[in-house]
Image (tube, rainbow, N blue to C red; front, side, top):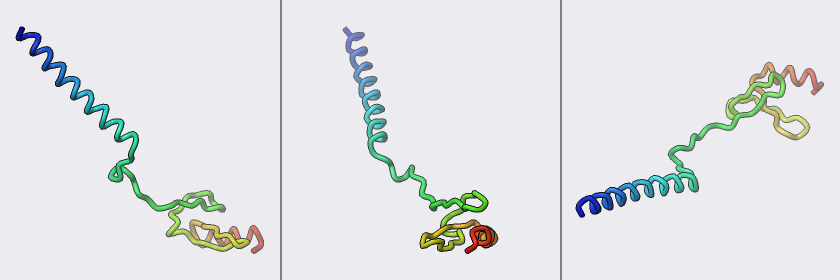
Length: 85
């Protein structure tokens, strides 16, 4: 009789542990935890040398009404010389 009670108790504890694991995994899958999110700066591609630069640090020029971002002044000047602008 004691064995049945112990097995029942063991399976109840095991069931609740497995249920808690699946519940937390489902919650993590459905909603993104803001603490695990990596916040970074937007990156832009330099059209001249094809390197990525942080947008806040990039050199910007307006070409045909649209902003174009470069990694440096040298790349911007080189691009302007190529395009004739």
